[in-house]
Length: 93
Image (cartoon, helix red, strand yellow):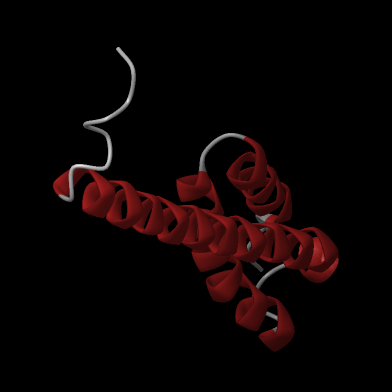
């Protein structure tokens, strides 16, 4: 039986929330590979709770990353349009 990687998935999920969202993507992918193995009995099912928690943290970090990207796109569209229209020309220097 393969040893579980629940602790690794959980740590990556938490790092995805706190430091770098790429870690959340990795946690999500690892959990998607490990959970079916645990349910099939080929991987140690002891870490299933940690794996599920890491997957949830990974999903949340990916959602936050997507929201940040959408925010920046909207921000640059609004200020890019304002700059192109000359809205900042009359500001005091």
